[in-house]
Image (tube, protein in one colour):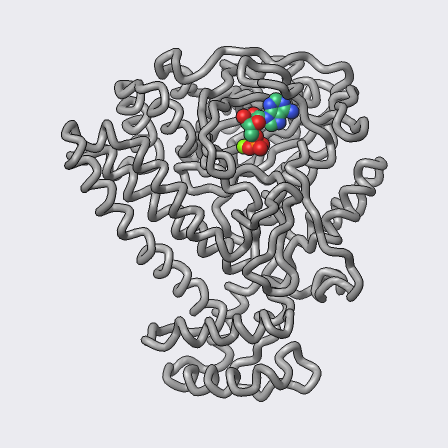
Length: 492
Ligand code: AMP
Ligand code: MG
């Protein structure tokens, strides 16, 4: 066909097919975004737009800002607030999208399907005491950290845009309001299942399990026991995700069951942070006073959340309650092993091990104990490890590590790969740069004061986290001593 007859990109490339809004009405409430005073686009993610089949050039000017705040409807959008519940710090609560609206599901040229959601789009029937809105700082933070996670190779929801609303939001202070356009494989959460289990709607549970299986695990869609297949796949995805978090030192901060997505993506960048000094007890969230969601607690908490999923699925696991419980328990029993498997694989990568040996777990634990004792920087220490070399006196691996280093060298000699290959494997697992908390904070403060340059620089640096070249020194080194302990807020 001659190129001249090629149709122009239709409607900027929006191609919605909204399977969730075809589910029964109990799954959501139809709500339109509440218009805002003065939409203005602050950040737009061209590469993500492109991968979604959208034409980035169509997202300039006032029209784009109007679309990405909800002032104008995207073609094909059918906005809904999704119903869900969730265990928040251990207590089951009825929640639902209190300030987010799912606009629709974008079907991409490569055949994938992604939820497009506006976060901060106004009140919904699930808003409870909230205002339905979001502040600029936290939305920029979600944009930055989620894109950093994506570049680190970690499954995550992504951020298409941040637009300001021209309206204030009232928190402890008055802050500029903003809307984030979030893109996710789906927003189906453990809490979505808990919602239907709590209201005793077994039919809805079956529909949801079937929908989720078809959407995320189509290879198991014809399974004889769909709910069991879903549970098994859910466990596997979380185990793999958690190993990634542990690999890069990510602390999610609020692993409530409503913030755990069945698709296995990291979701909800509220009080998250990255550890500097290695400490399994590291907590950043100001409200996590008992360390429920501390760095080293994340795998057991994920397993706890999966047990809540299993519990919610009981009525559809088997009509006989005892058989259902037996199936759930059998599946949950694999959790520890699945988590351990993925963690060991990630740690082997970090230490350049191509093979598996029985003593590996203890090799990793010995290093981590030494790092904990010396408050060694997690990212910097791993990135500084030199295979088959004696640590330099000024390396982060000082005397405390000498015995461990000998043990590691002996372990490396058990495999045939030369140092260069070992280092390549290590460099693919150990980021050179992460979103350092103090850098993120400084960039957000500048951005809310209208200077986007530091944030833009950080976005560029974090797009290639495994590459040292051209990275700012401040990102390649641990925070200066005296940097105050980082505190995050479930800030909205
Ligand atoms: P999160 O802590 O972000 O996971 O949110 C937990 C619940 O609170 C979800 O149901 C949110 O929709 C709701 N929520 C958070 N912030 C607001 C807000 N500003 N207005 C209304 N609902 C909110
Ligand atoms: Mg949430």
